[in-house]
Amino acid sequence: MIMERGMGAIILLSLFFIPSISISSDNTYLVNLIKKALDKELYKDRYWNVLLHYKHGLSGTESLIDDPAFFLAQDGKENPEAELIETLRSFFREYEDEKSNPRCRFPARYAWLKEKLDIDEDILPPSRCIELERFLDALKPESATLVFPAAYMNSPASMFGHTLIRIDSSYKSKLLSHAVNYAANTGDEGGISYLIKGLFGFFKGYFSILPYYEKIEEYSDLDMRDMWEYELNLTEDEVRKMVLHIWELKDIYSYYYFFDENCSYNLLFLLEAARPEVDLTDGFRQWVIPSDTVRAVIDRGLVRSVSYRPSRATRIRHMASYIPENYKIEAVEIASGSLMPDDILIREINNKEKAIILDIAAEMTQYKFMRQKLDRKNYQERFLQILKVRKELGKLEPEVYTVPAPARPDEGHSSGRLSTGTGLRNKEWYQAFMWRPAYHDLMDPDEGFQEGSEIIFVNLGFRYYYEKRRFQLQNIDIINIVSLGIRDEFFRPLSWKVHTGFRRELMKDYREHLIYILNPGFGIAGRSRVAGIYFAFTEAELKLSGSFRDNYSAGIGFSAGMIKNITDKCKLGLQAKTIFYEPENNKLHSISLKQNYKITKDTGLRLNLERIKYYSNYWTEGELILNFYF
Image (spheres, rainbow, N blue to C red):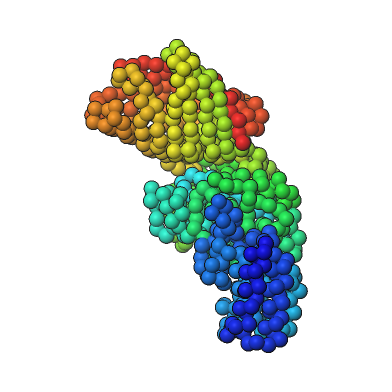
């Protein structure tokens, strides 16, 4: 404390020799302000740390913002005290334009310091922030809503879902609101390079503000993602504080990391800027899952109400549930132009079914246009024709268009999982221990997650064999992703998978060896009432280990299976797989049966059975595992 006050005295003394501020009563006022700020230790205040995104770690204090333009002091990124003093000094300088004026650039900082220090604006140089005033007038902020678009499996950055904040005004239609989004600027980057750069922070992330209807078109209409809207109970004054901080972050970058400093984590700073007593960002460390941030916001008492916005695909499939299977094809044909809309009127079906067919055709036509599969001229002609015929059939009951809300993202199981259980492998009993920080596999309960999706990162498995008294690492799943895109009459997504990591396998010498595996695959998936979700993949597999003759083994093959929810609590999975390897001239055949029983939202019991032939070895495994989600 003595050293801190000594440094403060040196800083105060140095102010009298700063050429940019004349030695006058104004200068004396500034010195007194800085002294007052240091006496109050405002640089340690939580709100100052929130506005500057400071976090305290093993290496000291550092802001998570990486853009030098965000700081006024040379060492402001690591020095909250220096940044506070330089911010106060900057208020007393004159600037040629408002873009370089810190009172206009950092209005949240200025408003807070003005309140805390009772700054007399009459002493400061005249300042008018016209752009900021226009920004506030355009948004007219009154309330705010946290929005969660569901997972989009075709984008590595969106596999966990996404969050953004909607700033609402007095307009009745929320479509006219503005959406605040944080995302990585990835350019044309894609594939493995995209994933690696996202994991290790090679992309710059920026905040952006767009009309909310544009985000709905992107997420709900194009990407077929359902959206959840969590209305926040922030006051109008709190929303204004948040909006001022959003302005401060305009055109400012921080390095984007998929696992921690991602879209959801950075949005939490905006909520803390609105209501600083709510601690959100300190609750996350190694990884940040969007659904977990939604739970945190709910747990802190920030949510007033929740509403569901189904995607265009969900709406189409819901309407299609009211007509027979063969009528769905006619809706597709109308949307594609191979069938005229008025041809439906002469069909020997009731008017309700005719209306539904045309409603689906209208939605599909809009979808094709947005996907650029239909030019504007043909779209307008076809869409107007459909509407003209549809008008003759009158209105339908609301339930045809009202999609029942599924379980919310915050109502699903937690993203982490600890597991333990017992198993038997070829008459050898073992105890199993597993740890998975994120996120969801195909056999986990579907509530709150995208059905047919699996996203696993860093899944560790250990076993203790009782008879041999041996404890061993069984597997390290670095990445394991499966996307089962359900194909139907309306949409034809491609299913895909990728798995990489280390796994212990029984080799030719009948001993277990830890080998590296890379296993990608592409295929198709569908749905039936009997089998649930069924799928088939063409797969490739590369194995690396010194136990192979040439240190590697490469194979190609196929797999097929099904996953069905037997009851609300019980899920059954069945899968068969065959891979042919070279240069080992070897085959793998396996068949597995899995059953998961949901005990509570965050506990479950799983039975795994597998029969495998590899080289000339056969072995059977069975295990009973208790899962704890956290």
